[in-house]
Length: 165
Image (cartoon, rainbow, N blue to C red; front, side):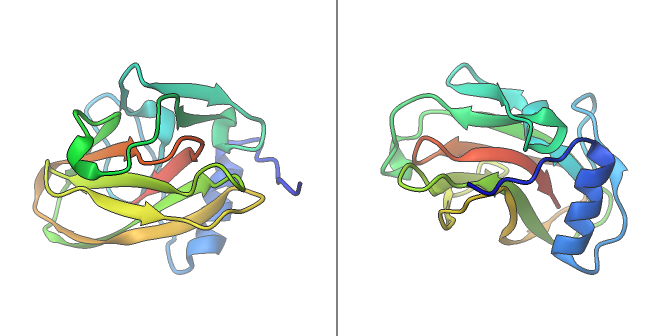
């Protein structure tokens, strides 16, 4: 199995720039006070509930990622609460593209749910891969102010490493 090791956050930023193309501004984020756009957000820095675990892997950015440890949820109507959430402080209303760095193990899981500001849950379906990779989840118009990104697993096993808005 081919898996490239990322040993520093600075290298993770360089990988994101080359993978996303045209994005050059990055800033370190913290979970205190939320995050800002143009920030690589480590998945484990969100508000995490008990049914999601922080796991360790030398191939993930910063050596940690999140993964669900509960049964699959086949229908978004069955989601009781989010598993992980992030507050992102948007300074300007505009359209943004959301990316995730994820690993989708073969034969186990390729899907998860996400939503903005308690809106409708959307399903992201990745392709099984052999390494962490950047994938685009979609585009969203966000208003100025605090915006909430929520995640929930659809299938167990997806390793979510970080996000970029």
